[in-house]
Amino acid sequence: MEMLEERIGYRFQNQALLKQAVTHSSYTNEMKIRKTKNYERLEFLGDAVLELVSSEFLFREHRTMPEGELTKLRASMVCEPALAFCAGDLELGNFILLGRGEEGTGGRRRDSIVSDVMEAVIGAIYLDGGMEPAREFINRFVLSDLEDKQLFYDSKSTLQELIQGKLKKSFHYELQKESGPEHDKLFSVAVYMEDRLLGTGEGRTKKSAEQQAAYQALLLLRGKGCI
Image 1 (tube, rainbow, N blue to C red):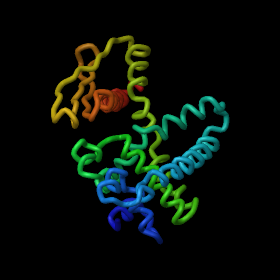
Image 2: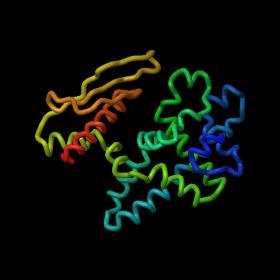
Image 3: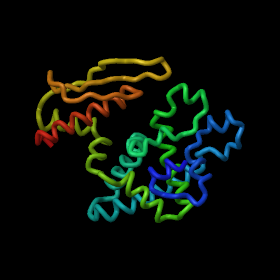
Image 4: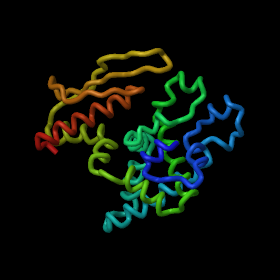
């Protein structure tokens, strides 16, 4: 917990809240701990805090953007893949307490679990220290480097619009490799513009691998002045 506090940049008065925030229901079930000791209630609270802070941030940053576009932008920033991407800065998956079964099926790398824990950590910080430290955490790990994060969040649709719309070329994804047991597959995908390799990616699903490949392709094309 001390190492995770260092990553977060916040010292808990009640460290039990942080431990609860990283405790999956499979662990409480296996250890015969009360269900309320898993992260689910903290995730519920953290989700609300994150929505408020991100809404206020977007409201102030985009003073002329209409409500519909603000809602769409917020949804892209706090969706499951986006929060899992943000949690990568903390290597949050390494700290999650999982039952053996969930561990064996790759739960530590599953976006749905990592994103839930990210929200639970926000809820824990809010309960322990109030809104300001929770806001600081969200600003540092969710609302920072938004240009690159937005590029990642919308990578597949952005790449399609860029190549087919602006560059007037065709592109396709190609599955390069599939490895691991059936319950814990790892997919490797490449994306090509016509016959030119633009990027590669890996993920636990083909969709997430394609998203990583699209993001790498966009970084390459941005470096060449195409964006």
